[in-house]
Image (tube, rainbow over all chains, first blue to last red; front, side, top):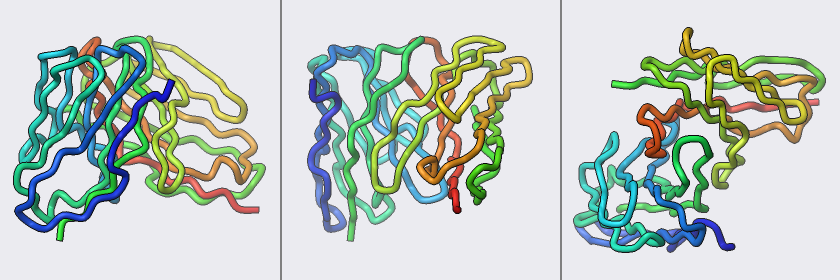
Amino acid sequence: NAGVTQTPKFQVLKTGQSMTLQCAQDMNHEYMSWYRQDPGMGLRLIHYSVGAGITDQGEVPNGYNVSRSTTEDFPLRLLSAAPSQTSVYFCASGRGGNTEAFFGQGTRLTVV
Amino acid sequence: ELKVEQNPLFLSMQEGKNYTIYCNYSTTSDRLYWYRQDPGKSLESLFVLLSNGAVKQEGRLMASLDTKARLSTLHITAAVHDLSATYFCAVDPDYNTDKLIFGTGTRLQVFP
């Protein structure tokens, strides 16, 4: 099992560019989520999904879109990148409830 | 709005000493998670606490949960350098969604 795989690991974008951060899991987990991590602020939930076709907003959803067409994949889209979106992004998956969520290795995004 | 607060934010301690990290949260929840993060790395699950009075131990770390006080503690016994990392607590306010709300983290540094 590869677990939770995020690509790319590093990315530099110019303001206004768009991109998609990829997240895939091979553990057949129903639940997937995206977080951003900024210094001194812990991790903040962007979007989450409780199954294919079902997504909802988290704490900081503005500027990000998601979709979940398959159980395995949960991409995060930045439609028009802004410097405020410079951060480290983590994808997580899990079975919910009584077990822990598993995190990917992160994508370090810089918007200039 | 659910708030999760950790203290201290930074902890520098000598090897062999004991200390406790506190995690307070502002809404009813009986699910609390502790994670560890090494610099530049992903998050690693340490403990899953699922009910009032739950206590779990792994090596020099012991975690407990008091849902009535909305408080979890992570106790470190006889610290060693390898425990140097950032520790996060997280609360799942909605059953079965993996919709985690994180504390800001406690950066632990253990010195000889």
